[in-house]
Length: 366
Image (cartoon, rainbow, N blue to C red; front, side, top):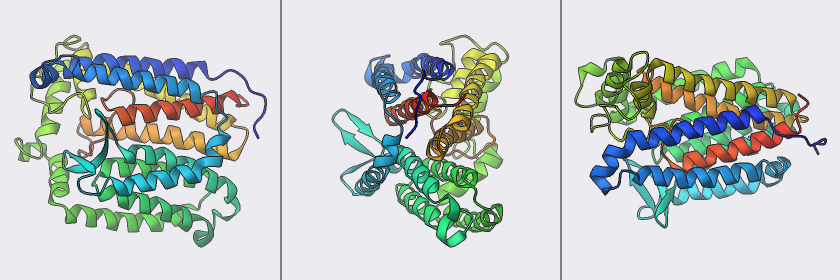
């Protein structure tokens, strides 16, 4: 058990709250026009985001005081529950369909996305498994294969929704954790070839994925179809220039960029706050990454270190994919920007994960 409890990482707390504050402001700014048109309430999305932000903050500070070994003890139960939810959400009439994906379960006036919580469940379970089987991780059959098999089963269930973006973040995070725990690079090279073949098969099996790849390479080949979102995103970022058009002055949120408060909120932020605003947000994420790595390096045990690596890896990968999509460097995947994009499940999960990271920091040697 970890000992010598101290104060949590103050810089990590301030950075998280700064990102959350910027997110709240931008959700309102990006969604006000659409919310007024659809719900006759400019604050419709902002109020919901504020509710989940409040819930998440309470959860973050509560979990910050809960010994992180609790997640080791209950990781098996948590991942079983998440697997059950991933199966339940696929049942017609039970799972809610949005944007062509059956990814949500309705809970009263709100809904949750089980795949978001599976990301954290997989991190906790994998941290436990890898810390207990470190001697075998260099062996393919005894160490690498069992852990990857579980990850691929979860990925398969998420792809049945389908939700390639969330699945990619989960797999990428788990690969980072497995590699850091000591797995051989040669094993990953072989699996990478298999993964590439699987990715090609996924793209070929669904025509819309082919269109997404095509639009990523040349969005202007289909400006009113598959390339529409990327083009509108670039039209938002370009005019923003160095200083931006001013907070609340976005033009693309006037029904050009579809639901700008979600996946493409960074485009609206860049349009209104310019290169300086976008760079400041990236700087905050960089500080978050730095402090997370510091926590992982200073953890008193391997489980805590891997748990911290998994959490910060999940956030970093999601940020890179989201911003990469928004600026046209990657195909559209439907990934939210942590702490900034509108979405209750994603926001709550991220704040819970930071709460766990803060608890690990309380036992850190640094």
